[in-house]
Image (tube, rainbow, N blue to C red):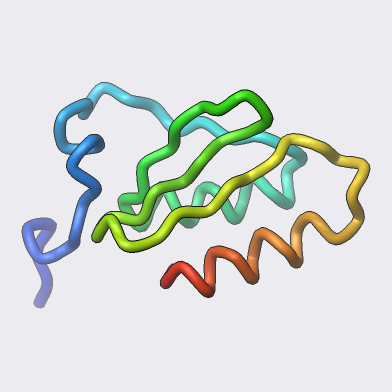
Length: 85
């Protein structure tokens, strides 16, 4: 039996509960970013995409908005896995 208190949440997410889900890229990339959001990661807009910050503050993943890279999904998935998602 798990409660929401047991799930780590990024401190910026705790400080800004009004923040809504944001993403870059196509619908395949949106699914990965939605999984990060559901896992309590924090998104920060950057010049070329969104930086996703891990809830335990030990990892981060940069999601770029370009759809021209046909490896974007696999690369983003690998980065999230390396960061602990």
